[in-house]
Image (cartoon, rainbow, N blue to C red; front, side, top):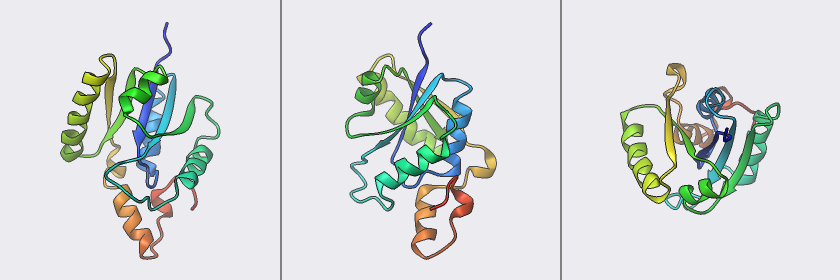
Length: 152
């Protein structure tokens, strides 16, 4: 039987407790998950350094040998093919996320016919957390520790 490998792509600026929840729940479905930090062409500058995020995400999942962290600067479908992944793992907080993710999913299927997007609905108590809100709170000196699975 082929190993079920999922890519969990995102900019993760920062990686939140909501992201952590999706990854841990994804382990019930997949043999291996690659958290792939992409370079988003719509975001010219990251708030948190990418090397910091790699370190913090690895720290978060240090006890899991089937969760890996990587970066990429290419189409997600191409990255998935290179890593023999036939699944994309995505979290949905609301209908806006669904509309956005649905469009991306359709494009990815055109680029890589065997690439299936799997959507997990965010756990209700985490659904309001977003990286952009966390960046804003952090920017003005607020405590973001309750939103992150690691210490900054």
